[in-house]
Length: 387
Ligand code: GLA
Image (cartoon, rainbow, N blue to C red; front, top):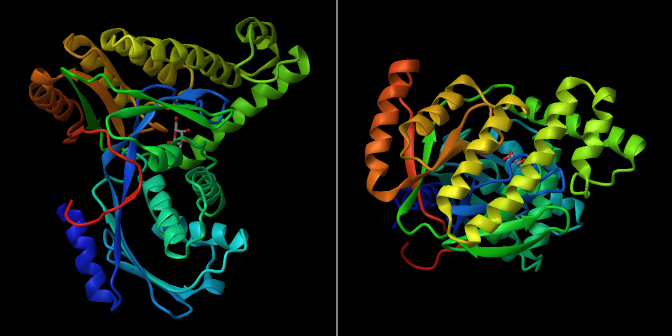
């Protein structure tokens, strides 16, 4: 069994007397389509084999018990005690609160959870926490909410207590993941299509810069507000309906003088990224990973220069990958300001690349990065038997 799952089950047995059901709730990667899930774009995420494990059981009392294995901390209270808090508690309590807001009759339960997904790495540990809990208690109390309803509930949960005005991508990937497939998600209609990920001779390598930006959530919301402000101008002055409109590039150019530079740059990045993602999907369907990778580098350039969500450490990692000439695609992944780069690396060169980039990065910043070769996995699921 996965060692983290073992830890979670052991913690459950130490703290509670009930018999748990075990769930795995994955983190996610995103191949392309960054910061456009809240801008009507298309994104291309996938669930991965790193994430959170949940042990959970009803306890026939009015009391909810959480034990967070990674922090060695507990929360205990009744449904009425659920309120905004701090840290990990905000994420789980916000999910419970969203079920309350739907009028669900929540009984007491015991829950231990912990993960092998590094927090702040850009692989969405928060959606893994939210999605895993939402899925598990939906099953526990037989409420029958669909995966889409659960994804939307988790998004509301993240907006509410943690106050991160995120898009739908992370929770969608967490709940809809499919082994060896990427999810092409249309964030306007919230409909998806699966594409087999033609990795064959390539590996997906995450390099964790180990940089965590303390202002990350505030900066994230600022990017969102810049896009909203730009869209207001585009609507009022050029009759634009969405960043997906035909001819948006010309309309944006016409309105440039009416926008501040940061607002214009964010809008420019968004329109570029929407068209890049469309091209990228065609390249993926044609199994052209090197072509796909070129677009990933372009995405990084836009995220760094126009959207301003990179940092010198991430730029260094991507630049290193580009100059090595061995890595067809590399870019920062997720919200930015730190966390991981995602790299498409030929399988036979993956270990060597990890070794070289890690040594160079350490020399430059005196930080030991972490590297993970990830596999594309299913979305949240109950684990029966040994994993
Ligand atoms: C975070 C958010 C997502 C998405 C990405 C950037 O992971 O939670 O909704 O906006 O950043 O693409």
